[in-house]
Image 1 (cartoon, one colour):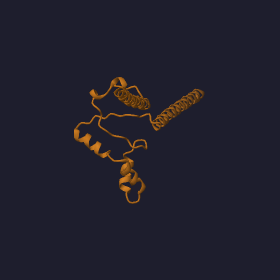
Image 2 (cartoon, rainbow, N blue to C red):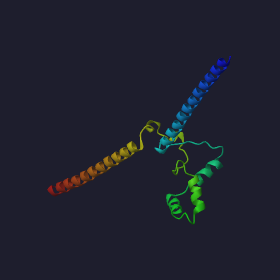
Image 3 (cartoon, rainbow, N blue to C red):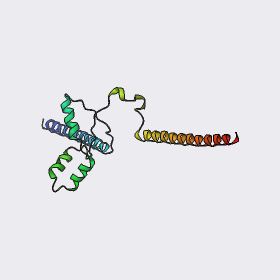
Image 4 (cartoon, helix red, strand yellow):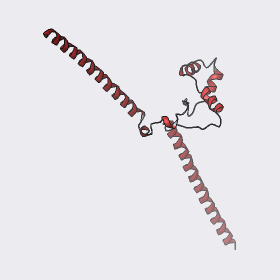
Length: 159
């Protein structure tokens, strides 16, 4: 009878050790998952967030709170000794150690949904290309006007 109780005890210890090992593995996995998410956030993966307010007053409070210029934040950061309370207030308003830009969202009618998949760099390239084409066409137009004026002066002299 004594052997069976010793065998049961060793089986229980074995089962307990397995459960503890499984728990440690799960905990390591979950911690590594959280660590990976934190790393992703540092790489600027969060680009936009949309917040729906219950009232217009709440929205206006947030817009006013984050309506602080870069220069004002910079000068407050430089003189932490005399502006410590403002500096600590600004630090509390950071998201992943970065200042967030808060603005009122555009109305759905104002969004060009067909352009939503283009990156900022792609849009910037398109704008530059359009400006370049416009400048070239303007220059060609001015050359045409000068050339035609020269031709008309030549025709006036002939007749």
